[in-house]
Length: 280
Ligand code: NAD
Image 1 (cartoon, rainbow, N blue to C red):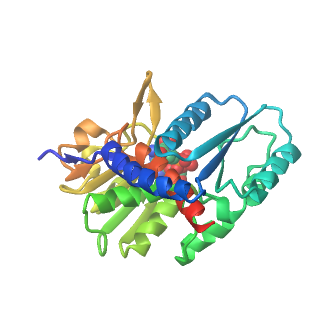
Image 2 (image 1 turned 180 degrees about the vertical axis):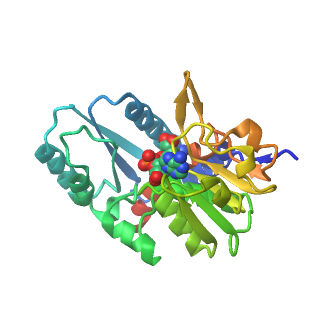
């Protein structure tokens, strides 16, 4: 058996086309959605991410502004910028690109963003709302994973979902989202006794670890849906957390890296910004 390849790039493109129509309507009402991205310092990967977010905004008509701040920016200067963006009606979404340089306090910065503009869904109020299922912004990668699975018409309710990884930005929120969809969810992490055995029980296996090709063929139940979140640079190429060539022989469906979860993350950021503008 060879798995169906889930084309995240094509699905993200469909979502962006729908969003472009919504943005055109909002713009006609004088309410062009505005996303402000704050980039501190010279982290090369962050620069690439910010550029692709900006390009995606332009494509759908969202007004995006990047605030590029020097590496030596102080906590007070950064908090002052966030305060100004919070107060500006033209700003619907605020995203602080992480990681911040070591001398800055990330937690304090995230807490300073207005929860109503926190399109990344990292503010504790939005984290709490996700836990209680009461709305709010959801982190973009987990939202993108759920959307990808739904659009692939994979059943979720009652299925065994196994998430490998328990980070605050992917593992924990994606587990919560699938729990809300009535899946039976298991979260594995670096201290799990036998990750492979847990993974083999999955109808939907989500790998968000950051270890190249960790998930092997014998970790996957025949016919399972495998979602690879990993982005690992190996010898100049990007590989996922799943050994794609092996696992595609046994899985029912699988996301490629690149071209799977990645494009969905950006599409969900745009969607959150449009929703914030529509509510403003
Ligand atoms: P993280 O380092 O914060 O968390 C990794 C998690 O994996 C931890 O909870 C840890 O306990 C667990 N882990 C580590 N080794 C393990 C092992 N051997 N077995 C089981 N669990 C293990 O990482 P993150 O921020 O959640 O990111 C995970 C991966 O997803 C990275 O490759 C990252 O680049 C990628 N990522 C991709 C996107 C996207 O848009 N596609 C977005 C965010 C992160």
